[in-house]
Amino acid sequence: MRYVEPDPSLPEVPLAGGDVTEGLVRIGDTVRRPPSRHAALTAEVLRFVEAAGFDGAPRCLGTDHAGRQVLSYVPGEVASRPRPAWMADDARAVSVAHLLRRYDDAVAPLGVPPSAAAVLEPEPAGAPPRVAGTPELIGHLDVTPDNVVFVDGEAHALIDFDMARPATRTEEVQNLLLWWAPLMAPRDRPEAMAGVDPFARARLLVDAYGLGSDARSEVVAVAENTAARAWFLMRDRAARLGGGWARMWAEGVGDTIRRRQEWLAEHRATLTGAVTA
Image (cartoon, rainbow, N blue to C red):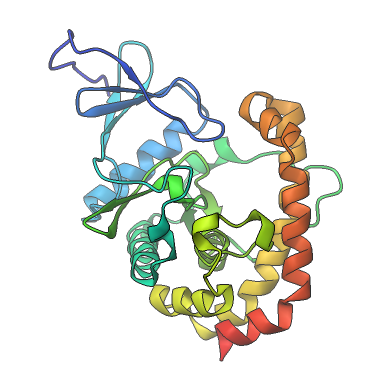
């Protein structure tokens, strides 16, 4: 669907595009994303959840004259770097879990559509296989502090669906825990979250999401498996795609992932007890 510009004179304002997205601009009350293999799935997902009544994501408005995907701009506050002190607030974290659950419930009836094939990647050599089971929905899978818009202190919208792909709810929740518990080595946690108990926060988040008992018993294993796979995936993307992926690899993201693996293995029993008790 071709987007008709309401005011062609409006300027393009560059936006921060996260770690890997380049060429992101704002024009008026819209955001333009450069063409990518993710565009068709993103459009289908956003239109599906909008039709389902979910208001916690941008609306997909079509494609502009330059072939860029046009999304509605979502005003609000994100936890940009350096991370703000409010990331330690339990109520804010709980609101992220509630938002993610609402998204997953809205998108679940879509299942895994044919457009998802375009975002699947080759399996990197050496990577352990997924253990999370058969994908059941299109997960956001990138619930970083940069990708959650807050309004009046509550999580209001998920943005940046470039990592959206077939997943299970358990994979969604382990990603939530990674960033908002957070499940990472102490040296890699934001300073703002230095005083947060990751085990208590993890329990709070799985409760807020409403993860079922079977999935709770699996979420730590899925988190460990995801971290193990992430090292190979990030190395592969750095070599194959370059750009932001190569920059992150050069800056040491592989070492960060290894430290996360070690921390998860060391605290496996405590974390499992926290989320299943």
